[in-house]
Image 1: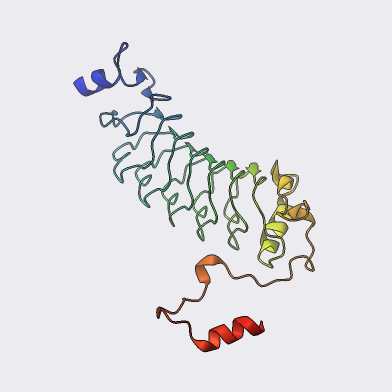
Image 2: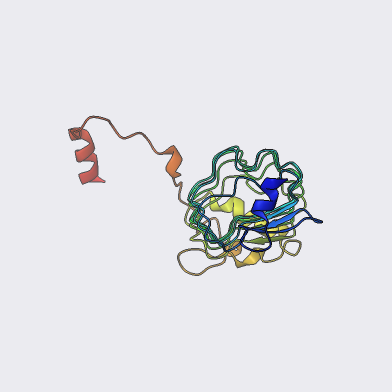
Length: 246
């Protein structure tokens, strides 16, 4: 198609293409938007090292044959919930080295063939409940170098094929009782999942693996379950009184 030729010209085209393998390489082109004329039968799409700060909902619509999507090293701050939903053949998704602070619920639910997922070197503070529940084929999960203090109960329970996970360089809060799920999961999978032991507590450099029930005795409230702050601008006297006497 003419659109494809414009995208993939040998000289001066935005991206380089290997038409035999349906591979489109748009890496390190200072792109702030995804080129609009990427062929729908593309198998491999490389967008690493650009300046993408957001992805339109329809960025990858129709790309039902895509098996590899490389988005590492961009400036992505958020993802819309359905952005990957049509990528039903996707095998590898690389989202490392971006600026993601959270993931929408269900973001990976349609990616049931995914074997490789990188989320390292972002700013993730938390993971939504069940975010990995549909990824039974996943072998590699990179979560290192984020701001994770805890993971939801059961977060990794559906990852029955997992052989490699990176959890280090996160400020794991080992004083909270809910860290015990992660500790128990690491103990259970130790020896079968590589890199698993490297998770360390934010305070004291203790391995999450070695936390005791005594260490993790606090009932901590997760940010998304905090009680609502009164909407009135004046602070009730009772609240001030409680603060003084706590």
